[in-house]
Image (cartoon, rainbow, N blue to C red; front, side):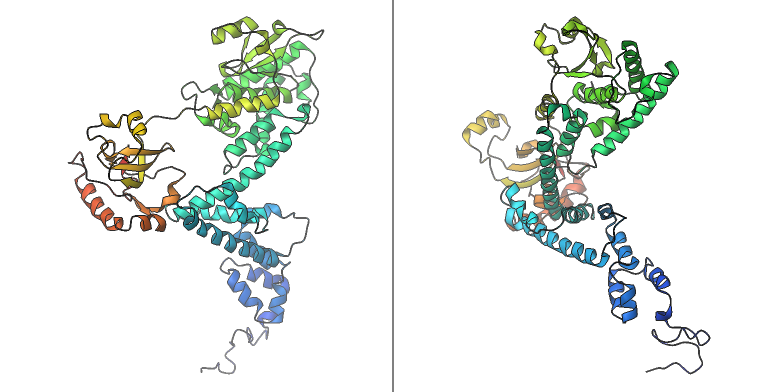
Length: 522
């Protein structure tokens, strides 16, 4: 073994740094050692090894110090919001806990494919995640890390991770929604209820009441600037978010409504989505704020919230086929329907009389339809709109995940679907396909053709059957390969033939195996 010569000024790891200083690494101040051990090149294994070298380094790497805090931050930065800065934390303990939870979550997710490949995953199946007793934010963070891994790989793992994450978040949102609906009506904010519906329908999106409120406050500031030009002494300019006061003067209310219309429709270009009315994005507040377009009910929720922040009370009206807001024009007595101005937020804030509202829908209605509705009724209509959104047409890319040599459906289904009108009738291969529009169908071979430029399919069930996307096709996962053991070789052969001749052959193909997935369109 080689040894250093005396006087060369060098030694081993625990030796002297130089003859002149005579200092060891462990002689350095704790602050400097912490600084060194927080270098980006060092990972958790390095720190664990260093802390085992001697008592001095072990003490420097204690759980409440900066070293393990640094390791925690660089590995799980999204979890830092759960740790108040005013409190002391044992970062080594937290690191270990988060690491163990991650292993438990991955083992559970990996087990789902074999257990649920042939059946629907029910909510009860996720109770074992809850039974781990792990902090919920640890579980979510691990599931998100699975979803954010290599985009085209581990699709089956991602499929079940997404299912579990959906379940966990929707369960929490459902609890919040039930608590919200249990409040007295006067304590139910329309905007808060609409955000809860948004969150439930989009559990993986970054949607919060705080973020929505912040965006609305920015719009309010713009309205106040416009209002200040018209009336520098307007009371709404002095109003604060917690003030809650309403403006009594009708002229001052009118000034607010005019400024609101000017900013929302002229300056910010919000509008009703006439071209794509039934797009569900029109119903989600966070999407309305991003895309600046919506349907009557979502624009009305936005409008009445902005008006309320500026001291003007507007009420929702569940008018047939067209949601409106009403604005009372008298102080004394019990007003009737003619004492209100009705605001069409879908029509850029146009103000209507009760009679003009009937012209809007083309027929007369009773006075009951002009009544204000509760927040609960607003939410019910929002949910009803989402449930009634129609399906889009055919002509989409699809993925095969199973097939029969001939149609195996009942005679009633064959008659209803007019299978006998097909050129080859029921005596041709029929395929189980996942379609780009999110549906699952049973398609005849003559209705399928190879896609000239295969793309990934945005269907929620993809990960249930496939492991990854490989440019021209999806690769079956272990369970699908077990069901169709001979298809791997056939897939490669057919792919080579098909994409060599696709430009010259319009394609009447033989039976296609279930792995030629995204190479088709229906």
